[in-house]
Amino acid sequence: MTDYLPAGLRALADAGDSDAIGQVIELAVEHDDMDLLRTFADAGHRDAADILIELATEQGDMDELRRLADAGNTVAAEQLSELTAV
Image 1 (spheres, helix red, strand yellow):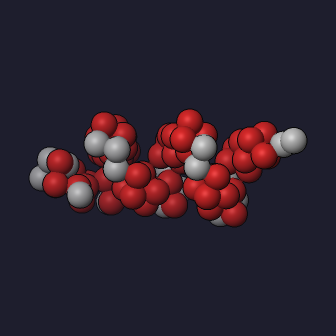
Image 2 (cartoon, rainbow, N blue to C red):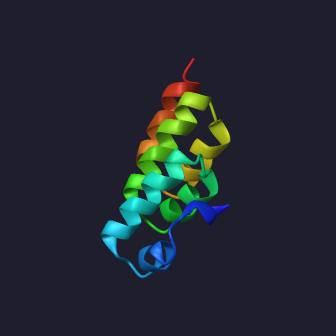
Image 3 (cartoon, one colour):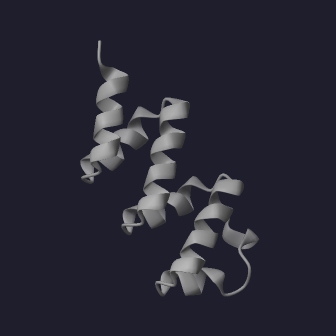
């Protein structure tokens, strides 16, 4: 599903180029590519994780918030706690 990425941009991002990472994340958001956002969030890119948390919260996706929280993301854990508080 990443056929929307310009040639070579993903390779630059995967190599750690911060500008390329930012561009890839922006394009992933524009194309609703949750899988790519997860990939970058799981690799430790906070911007991708923050976007996933925001989208999961908006969509009420408790599974995504739980997945992120279980991986150690404290913001996701806090958000999950707020959404599940009675």
